[in-house]
Image 1 (cartoon, rainbow over the protein chains, first blue to last red):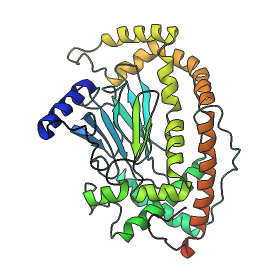
Image 2: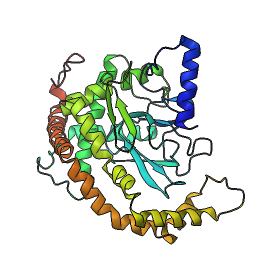
Image 3: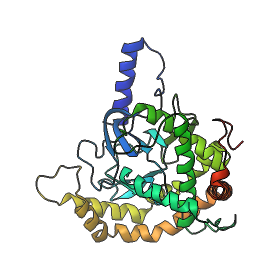
Image 4: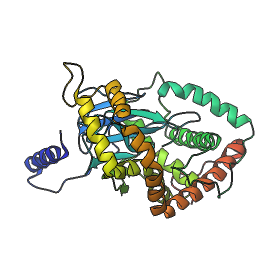
Amino acid sequence: MTLKHSLAGAAAALLLATGGLALAPPAGAADCPSGHFCTWENANFDGQRANWSGDDGWWESWIADEDSSWANHGVSGPGVKDHVKVFSRAHQGGHMTICLAPGQEVGYNGAANDNGDSHTWAMSC
Amino acid sequence: MLRRLAPAATAVALLLTGCTTPGPGPDAPARNSAPVTDPAEDDLLKTAQLTLVTRCLARQGLALPTRTHSTEDPRLQSALFGTGPSELSLTLPTGATVTAHTDGCLADALHTLYGDQRRWFHAQVTVNNLRALAADRMKTDPAHRAAMARWTDCAATRPRGTLPDRVPPAVADRCAVQSGLMDVRARLEPAELARVRAERRDQLTTYQQLRTRALRRASALIGAQPAITIQPKGTEGT
């Protein structure tokens, strides 16, 4: 889902629910299991979620290039690859679009959502 | 990744009983690329972080996930990563707004180690994404555009049955070589990286300063492990 669609959908849902209050931020840290990297099809950690404790060189089609928010809930420790690098492949021929340290989340990306195709855990960015 | 926690715990135990040496001083160079960090230093910081997080969780009667504890446990997630709206936020030039919490055991650990979690967050997010920014900037270069067009043509020829937007990794990699995209990137990246690094020099300096401070803290923490007393939550590192 594109960001535009997702925001429009979220706004519409919120209008229905509240009669028109401003978009509220998520209630807490994104709902992503400890030790996992998560990505959602919609902005603000909404919609269907994919999560991994390891690497994935080719995301499944439902989330590939549909990713709109991300969270690194990795747990650091010596020798642990706790940073996550997200790569675009289909559209850019493969470059790193973002690198997240544990606890860092991205609710949306105004320029480059729906872009991810793979990720790897790394010692650092 | 969780499976790695068991060996990690062993490594912590080993590190805790041995001596640790602090890393190089504040002048450690970081000029050529996104900072290349010393793996031994990285491990020291990660050991200290794990130690602090583990203690913080223990004070709340919680522990890091094991085979018997679900990683989905919402109490653990909140205790680790924080609650309420995220207090830290930085929008990168690439468009991504990166956020983090200032509460929770991870935030406490970072604050203790780096002294100022907010400053560290801004410096770390900026520095960690210099390479992504350089890659983004390269896309406007005419040579890159031309190579990208060749890559797109190349990737359009692929096995029947694959979806239009789904370029298999093997095809993408082959096309990156055949189109010359990989060569163009390799040629453009050093200059682009140097530019983005020059533009973010203040954040790179902050990054090095806070990391050096954290290494000192981590050494003291790990070296003086048995004597460390835990301060009440929120008063650490101030």
